[in-house]
Length: 171
Image (tube, rainbow, N blue to C red; front, side):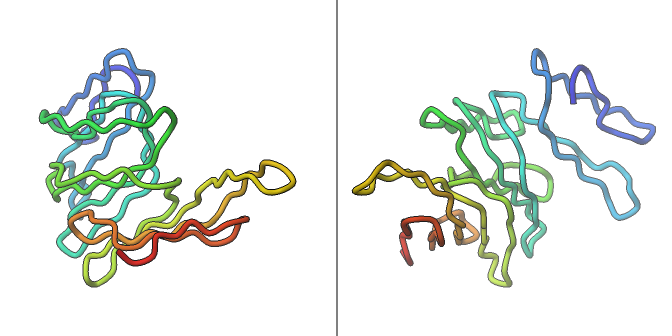
């Protein structure tokens, strides 16, 4: 989204102004009849949303990547997270009304999210592993599997493939 945008496709008006940004990550919610309910946008820093799912209470789980320091709370409250220099992954949880519950920085790049019957969040993706062997420096990409509880606590993280395993196992 760029420039002043009406997020409501119906008769009402719900405008978001992104300011100087060329793009604007946003999330809109509609009811089962397709009627607009609400929209939120992230106006701060570099943010890219990659995945979305819901838990058993219809809370919204999002994953993506960010850079620099950003305000991850899409509402008027401020909750900042900072990268360590490059682009980093995050997982966040919103209420069904779009209010921030929690946000956690994550390892690697998340390409898929799912929620099990116990509201545990499973994230899969990839991680770039750089290491030095006896012969030379190497880089490898491994498959990443992470498990978070409903409160955002990391329960398990492991990678598979590549040249080395960097798993944390159960915590």
